[in-house]
Length: 435
Image 1: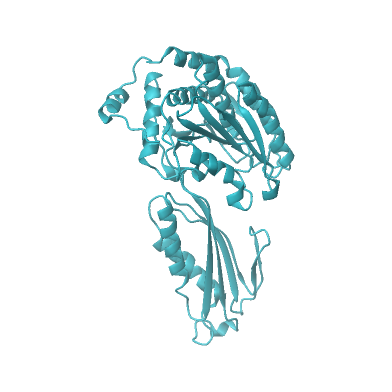
Image 2: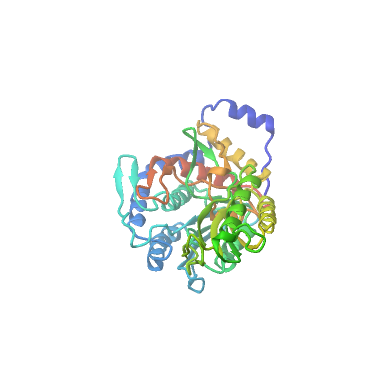
């Protein structure tokens, strides 16, 4: 679905936030979200206290069991999609069927966190309008924003006609395998939808709320080099060559010099070289041994690759393969590149959707949200549906320290994000579907 607003009208309305221009149901939404704040914080505390590390399947399911009745009370049909065949717990999908032929909206979040049961980071500690706990922002706070928005819509009467699917995956932090099967239900929902909203944490730019119209991809690469071993006195000679470590160094330094372009990064996570060097079974470690007077026979390195568009991904991969093929004498090299999370490219449809959200900000008397630099955002589940539907990411709460001990949520951001979301969904629900 493409949202095109008159450019002059947008510019005029955004130039100076004025008094609210909300309808009566929209004003009711604002008030309902505000009055439900403490209830929302209580729900956040309840689900935060349940450990739901991706590999704690029972914990992921326990969070889903708390949330399912919340959606059912609002009239949603709830489904638990078992993912044990893909090595993960499962996904919670909630569906609301409204007026036929109107905008179909997909809301995306996730049940799991990076904090497994052996993590020392536990609990929920509130200090005024802030709270600390594992997953409070990523992504349990995002789930609470979704529910707060839907409750307000129900109270205001704007939920009745809406067509909504809420997709809460259970393995966003470490997706199951095969990836195509683990994300099949989400992709199907993305093809169904006209609009997708991702409820990862709110982007903040220079102290102001910002809109996320793009996210970069997340992929990985594994590089191995090999060489003829021998006495180090022959290094660089025609008969002995350069050894596996020099070949590895040549390739990695060529990546550094030849790959740079805007929004592209390519980190080297770890490497090892010697006689021999071997990648660990977990693909997250390596072992090696050797002597200073032996030309090393092998080297291995792994890293990631993040790009803004599929074309940028392919362009970078092609350059990397070409670099790898320019072998030093006496050496050979091989690279395997795996694209996992695709990019969410900045499209005109995404920009128009942010314009729609900014029209709501104006009506609420709030500042306009500028587009957030995509180079500062990691990959997320919304990227899997980005090829099929217009979307906005970063619709969850504000906070800091995601994926680390001390993860903190700004609790009042739940209110403003839920208000924005509920009004946006209510307005879209009145419009015709594009498919």
